[in-house]
Length: 220
Image (cartoon, rainbow, N blue to C red; front, side, top):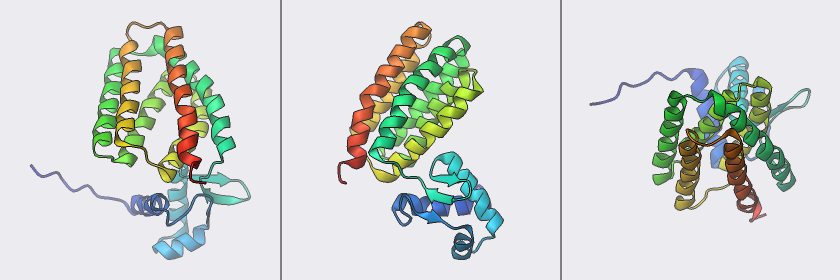
């Protein structure tokens, strides 16, 4: 059976074109993004470019600073370590708070996301891998029941995911290992206490911190 061709809006085309340019290195981390210039290059109106930049900010690929403009996301080793120092504690807290709210349907959703991560890892489809990895974490954040915690983690973690995707790729097996570590946490949910889940999640994140810094900045 052939799949139906899905219509792609002009906005989505602009988002895809800009995202492809960022991921390919055509537009480098830290580069300034001028709306009028992008509109001219892409043959689109400035309002459409502005919408696309808002979506790319949501995905973590750009950072918008009031009165200064928009730049492609860039992080220093100190930034990454500082983000992780907060991320480790806040995500561990998120899953602890989420545990009483997690239903069997939520567990099944997380299992399906992990399967998509595994499928993407097998063919090294890194954008799809990180898209589902982020979906996993966002689900946990939302289940915490605290919108302030969710908002804080969005601002901390989403740019980190995007920057990692821009800057580096790991060996095939490490992506499968990452999916496996996520799966172990999900399979522990039905029987583990909130505190045990918190400690398990925290240990998983701590083990990744130094590896991430090394992968991101070893060539600099």
